[in-house]
Length: 118
Image (cartoon, rainbow, N blue to C red):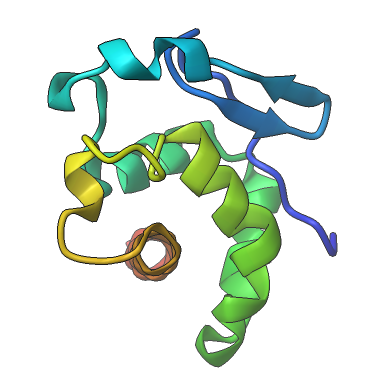
């Protein structure tokens, strides 16, 4: 699996790039407020609940030092699915959306390791 994609659409509010196409909700972005977005920890839990076991295993089999290889595939899907590019998104207040999505991937990786050990 060289290109991992998030194949979930949370609602029509979020723009979501999936392997089957793009749901474009930019026309609604001017109406969004901070309450429409998830915080980073919530995104990790949401991803955990949505990813298949195969995708979770793929992430776990990726060495931590190589998680950056997921930036243009999985990371892009995280940025687009969860609206990390939107200026009102509270998850990106302190850093660039690219950095936020990478931190989410790292947090998901750590969460998967913890879950695997239980």
